Image 1 (cartoon, rainbow, N blue to C red):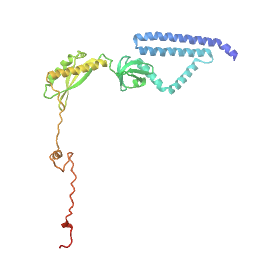
Image 2: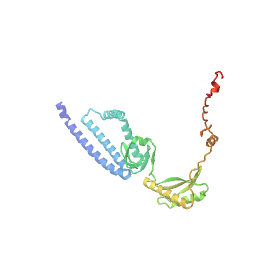
Image 3: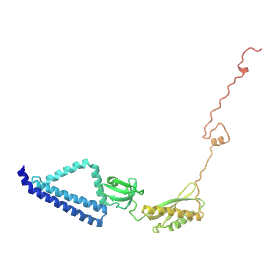
Image 4: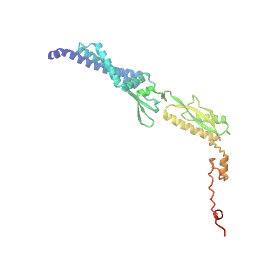
Length: 302
């Protein structure tokens, strides 16, 4: 055993030098790839991909060092053993590998980036990080949200900030007596004067529905896609439209409710004791029993 160990010392030394050199090369490669990816890709992509490539180079170096240390071990056998090991790990850590693969696909496809505001799996927020396992969001309430990458990849993703502007809308109900064309023109003029409302595309106001008591007009305008500015613009637009319609004398009527009295309801109002307001019948009153002495006294008359 000692002689075998002494004979193997040169190979062990060569393997150690090879692993050390592979580690240095992987670190330098990670730094170079990180800088190169940052010029064309997102920070999350550059960070994750540089790590993955660096670890892959280091793994190949370790396999080569094992082949140098043990000459009887062929590289083909090492690859076969690595494949079997990967299969076992895949079954044991299926969820982790699924999240990892989904994360790499998200980084390559880049449907959204860090800083985008998205909505996915009924959650909304600003993307802070996309790593190899999960996507991190900061909700609009200031809370941190961690979503596994597989859930992000398998579900519908709504990217609110993919474009600089998006369209908002709200409904206005006016009385039937008012001039609809005058109301729509007044709404458009009011929207054009609001800060934050885009001039191109221009705001529009169209009749949307004939309601029970109002003519419903839908006002639509374009504004910044960032949520904070979008909420402020919507508030300013509604306030401006209401002020303009009030100034022009256009009414906002309340809902009209028509009560149609049924015959049973009318009978109950007029005091008919036999009918309830719901249309039912009162139970008949009990008749007092007759206890007259003349009816029940069958004794001899005196």
